[in-house]
Amino acid sequence: MNQLRRERIGKYIQEKGAVTVKEVSALFPDVSLMTIHRDLEKLEEEIDRLLGEIHNSLYQKALENRERRTYTAASMEEILSIAGDPEKTGFIRTMWCEDPACEARMKEEAGLTSRCMPLEQEHLYDVCPICGKPAKSMIIWGKAY
Image (cartoon, rainbow, N blue to C red):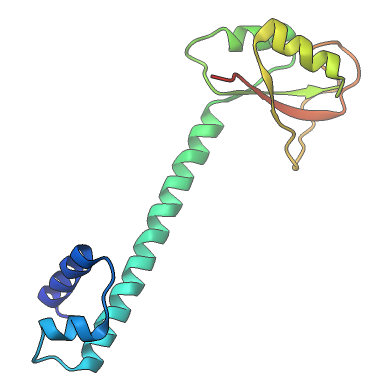
């Protein structure tokens, strides 16, 4: 696709939002409809490719950010230390006995509420850091702002 023609088509699309082959062909009377159609297809492919790259880049950055800001704690002391540190915003993952009383205690003492129980469970350790009973699941905790 001719670079100048591609730039003009791109600007025209930005102005109009959506265009037809016939509308674009009016901008280039010396270019065949087949060429305009092919140019638009190539432009669409390029836009799809760029959007895919942008999506993948943003997703990767978000994933890295989430991983960097997710901490693991094995005891209530560790949970309180992480939750109380203004430099450590994000999530805390622990094991949990699944007792609602422990969830209530976590909210009361650490200001954290459950965010999710991942489908892909990891066995971090054997006991619930809140009560010391045998742990059943890994859970992610976070603060509500």
